[in-house]
Amino acid sequence: MKKKLLAALIFAPFALLPSAVGNAENTFDDGRWEKSAGTPLEEKSLQATSEDFRLQSGGYTFVPINPYRTFDSRGLSYYLQGGYTNRFDVLTDQYGVSQIPYGAVAVTYNLTVTSTFGEGFFSIYPVDIYWPGTSSVNWISSGQTIANGGVVAIGDYAGVYGGVEVYVGPNRPGVATDYIIDITGYYI
Image 1 (spheres, rainbow, N blue to C red):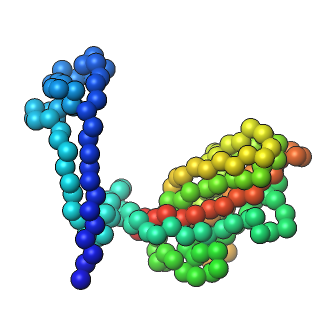
Image 2 (cartoon, rainbow, N blue to C red):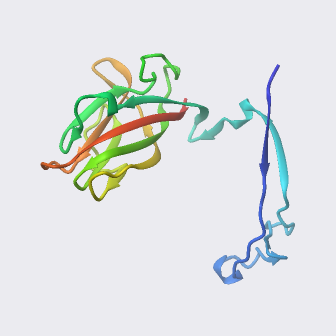
């Protein structure tokens, strides 16, 4: 028996200037955005099964899951310092229990840096590439806790599939942080 999920899609009235739209076909009626067919959006309810929440993207299917913690450095005796990396598996939770099927190509995550030192950044990227010069979250002083979400492809390192690599920068003394990574979904 499939569980039914109820999600309400509510479109509240809002006012924008027609010049901000850039398309004369879209007009405003009673403060509501009109579809190009000319009917205003109204409050709607959507009833769907969990299978309906899988989204197609670029030939892959997004599968939302109950979030799980895949890594938490707060229990370690050291911080990840500027210029250093760490590699780990995101297909399992922090206890090594498999959570995502083999064959997933990317995961969605929530990344938190906490107990920061100095001014720096944290990057997460596939384990089988060099650091691409990107940042996933930045901090500007010591003692901050900051979170950000994103999507990262997963890679293959030394014959082990399902890995990501993290990097703290810049490469200088006095930059370090603890970090937590929760997985919230995957693409397959």
